[in-house]
Image 1 (cartoon, rainbow, N blue to C red):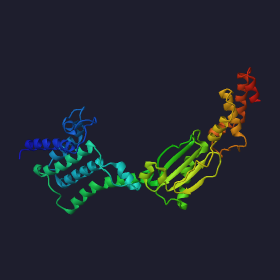
Image 2 (image 1 turned 90 degrees about the vertical axis):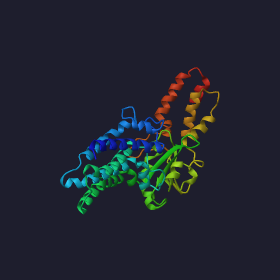
Image 3 (image 1 turned 135 degrees about the vertical axis):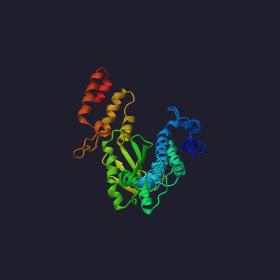
Image 4 (image 1 turned 120 degrees about the horizontal axis):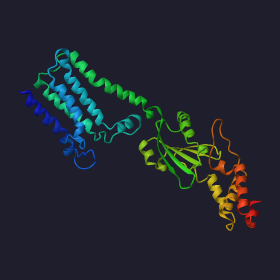
Length: 351
């Protein structure tokens, strides 16, 4: 058969096949709208077809340099098989696979709309049908088959193993699933999935790094934190506090950390500094200026509070530390005394 005719036949089949497959699967164009069929047929930079050119050219060179002489001749199909596997790996949704390998989440759609992977797969598979026409041969011995198979599998397998080992989710027994504020200002809920038996000694020991990461004493915005742990990543991502299997309560004011099985309310029976400050503000004389009322509220909220001491080597900055700083409070008082020099009622309240 004439090699020119074979090339034309190859070009037509190889170029149209991925566009037809993408169109049949309902893929969108690279711009995210319309069908991929027409988009993948056009080999210019503004269309998806331009992404087909590298694999089409590379596979065409492999195919039309046939027959390869000597021992290399038996490895052509192995090379094309390796290309097929690389294309399949590109089509896989690696995020979903990583979640399936490192958490309890499995199933769902494991493929993604990846035109490069589709082009490589179709080119390499279709090229297998043309090798014989161009004088290429099948591997004739066990050794050739073995070398081809090793070439096709070793690199992707080694990459997959190395990626899993390097994935922090594989090393870390906890997966962060988000956080949001609770109903009261200064209260926050944080959600984690755990691969460890919740409540076990191993869990409590490993969780120390999580608790350190969310230490409210180092947080200017959050005073009370509920860390909710789940044995299902999907449940943790749903952030439904009722489904938590274990809860750890952290408090900025020095209240001891609380470890509780199940979903536990860390907030309703504990008064944070912000709540104490708000309560003190509401008790002030409403006829006083706003900033004077705020200073008086800070003074009253700090009465009887044990000073917060930062751990060695750490800088502590939070709402209570700022509000109950005696030097800062005195500077503010002096500023207010000057500001309201003619307001006897305000001056009396500040003395």
